[in-house]
Length: 282
Image (cartoon, rainbow, N blue to C red; front, side, top):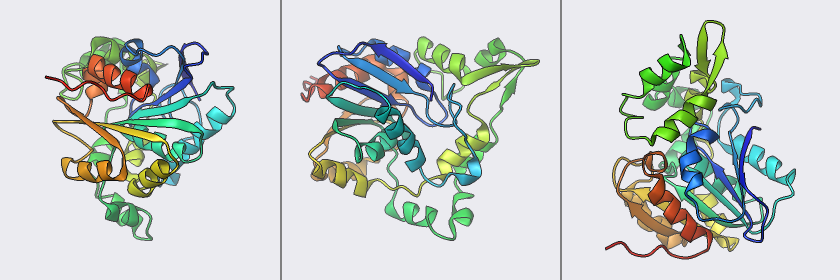
């Protein structure tokens, strides 16, 4: 796995941060640079993303558990300092939760986790999986994504005006493209193949609620940051997460909050890493 490293070993411990579907570690440099954390920070690019070269066969991906297994294996090979904090955004948030069940983590910080109805996990794990997952619209859109560009500059000019990227921090976009493209003869191509990104959206057999319950029962601190705009963490399920024992916070913005407003997210993370509730905004 390709790992972006920052900070240094100290008694403050280790922070592992996991990125969203289709992105990579380098896109989160602005967020990481704003953290008030004196320990070591490890940010891997997940299987099929960025500069990581682990096998990524879309036909074999049915859940995000394999990504969690990769993270567990990575950390078991690391001489990391405790306490360990696992954090992530979107798919990375859920992957952090899955990995936390098998690691001595003190805390799990989830930014805009992907929380879907229970029946989707059941359907995605059933013999009828293929008929179901092929109807997921966001997966269809990902599969049709453009993969090749005549140059890196052409790719930036293509992405910058798009609604998805329009409000990103400039450094986040630069980081995404630096690791998210590889040079090929006659131009550049995405390191996260559209077929793999589509498979990520279809691979929903892992679920969410049983893992949240298990991690909290293990005595690990769980905090979730949800957006007040477009979200993958539905407002109607947030009271349920709080009832399970997770500490919740909402901020203005949408699903790409860590890339659009890294200051706000870094502030929240810095408090939660220390186990402190961020101050109430007035």
